[in-house]
Amino acid sequence: MSGSETAIFIGVIVTLWIAQMVLGYRQAIKLSRRIAELRRRGTVAVGMGRGRFRRRTYAIVAVDRGDRIVEAEALRGWSSIATPKPIPELTGLSLHTADRHELMANRDPALQAALRQALSAIKESRAAQEHAKGGALVREDA
Image 1 (tube, helix red, strand yellow):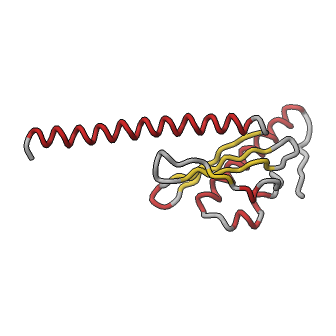
Image 2 (cartoon, one colour):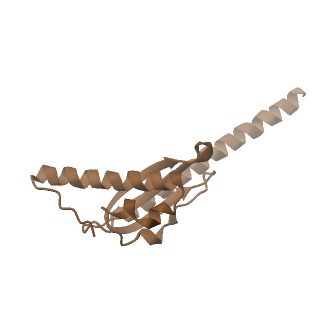
Image 3 (cartoon, one colour):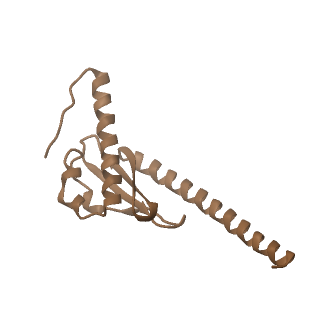
């Protein structure tokens, strides 16, 4: 390989690397905005699971004051242009029973782990809030 071919090759690699960084940044900004939108609807948590080949799957869950899931979304994919996809089947389920619901069993293991992590984070947050108030946590198992 000649010097000019090497320079072109390095230039292409650097250009692709910069493009990946820009696309990743844009994805992070879009995701942050989406989470901000969901926060207007309730308490929001994000969970992460790992799939094959260390591919990450993220779950975003919003829960209202009545401990019902108002929205759930999954973000997964190989590229930085992946966007969150809604999981409408989880809408309306109780925070306390969603992780044991049959709809969870039909999900891939990485998404299951991400959803469980997000639901667990909200449960822990609610328990800490109740404890700080000096009250007992009220569980709704319906």
